[in-house]
Length: 334
Image (cartoon, rainbow, N blue to C red):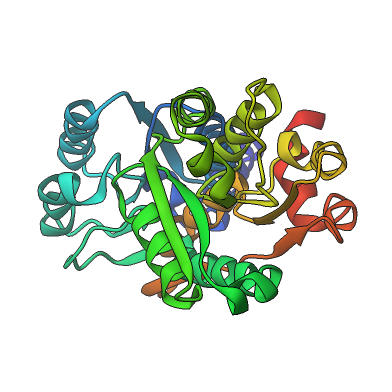
């Protein structure tokens, strides 16, 4: 009788554990991202991988975390998770529209799909989460308007634009900027950097070394789409040893990185101010949390925009003590 009671209690313990997990060990989340080709994406991968394991384990679910070097590899990963019948997918596409067919297969298989960062146009996913890129662009335009108010009242102000790539992210940021920027701003030249600091630095160096004196000295500001890109532009300006006078007063960026913020005082002493709008690599965790919410039985749908915060020479030190910055670099302390 005592032996029978022991067996019963062991069975009851297993049943109770399964009940607490809600049967979660039978469910699986798949998080699919590009591999790191620049610092922001590398930080995002670190946050996403840590959060996927932590959240899935806490909720009693299985998980897989996949990265890929290109669209072909990412499409193959999508085929595999569909075949394996995972229960929810969080997808950061290499390029949204080029992954549309593969993403549609997830939807057609009845698997909830969270799209992160890069939009897929005319697509009916479960939900999408991204930075508020349009607002980032609009607010950058407004900032430029205020900063150059006197110059704009007197005439045209020439600027350079350094974009990221051809995805929805830079498109939204650029469209937002030019929707609010004063009509007297003139885009003198633009480049696509593929989010690379080195590429941006080379592009800026080439502009400074090959342009005429009139063209170099006409530029008053630089609108960039990323902190690494801005860092490259600023490095090129600092290294310039030509005969022309550089009249750039303001450089903007997105993603308030430690590298960029640590040089605010340095470049201000050179006569160059900066404004950056926050866009943290850690916000990918929000998308993974949406996937976990679905597995928990919660209703998830629509577009979720992560708000941005303006950081300039007047408040960057306070920002570096705040929650967005602290969370971004929290993994460095573990």
